[in-house]
Image 1 (cartoon, rainbow, N blue to C red):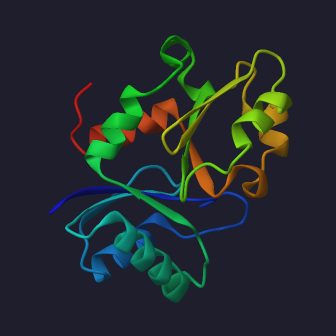
Image 2 (cartoon, rainbow, N blue to C red; image 1 turned 135 degrees about the horizontal axis):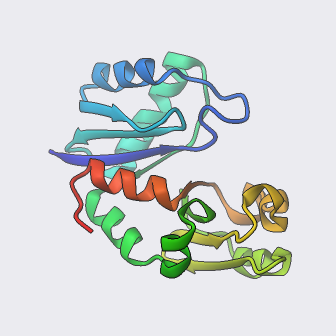
Length: 179
């Protein structure tokens, strides 16, 4: 058994609600060990021997059964998360303004043309890079004012969920990654 990081898309934002205590209880009922949540924004860390694809399927089915919610889940291993942390294309920006660097972890890869489309929407110094199955964003003026963030939908990008650099590092700490 090893840690698994589970990210839920849109959890406790946009009207999708599941109390974190109930989320941990659901994970325990599924046989997942030591479920821990980070914040109230769809971050769950468990111990499991299941493959990531199988765990994604099981978690999504449990979310629908337990809460009546169709929520996309992205599951990553500690090694995958370590690669994500190491790949950050905006390290200086992340050190100075960690809440303004966002890693969008994609469920089934980045949709063809998404990177170019995001770059066309960028304004005010915004940058976007694609590394493996992650879209990386630098929002110098914050997400709320971003031309990319206002118009980039799953239809354009593919299904994913974003976490700012602060959250990325906290999840790394939760699975015992050293930086």
